[in-house]
Length: 112
Image (tube, rainbow, N blue to C red; front, side, top):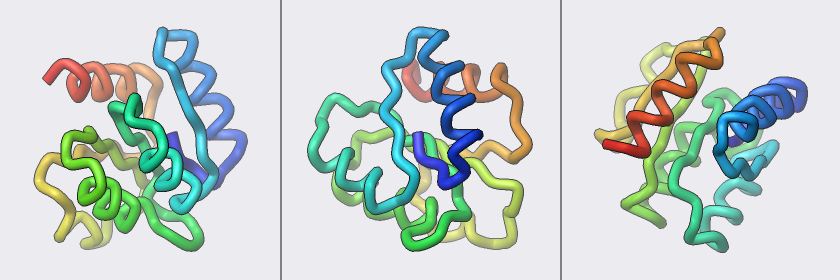
């Protein structure tokens, strides 16, 4: 999970861990990309879109290039045109989101 908002990162990652997910966290795109590069066990990238430095969109593109099998879910409260140009199988969740919505989306991404 990647989010530059530490309280959101902590709350959501803890909730996901409580649901049985093994969660690695990063506070920026560069840190996340390094973890994806170094840890082949990562199945899903769940990232905020608007972050300083490497945005979630750029992270998704680079991660998909590095690991084509990686499932990607992006979240944002801002959807102004940035969705265009993303890899086709990237899923989007609008913020504010609810834990149930995240769990349902991640479950579908893992299973399907």
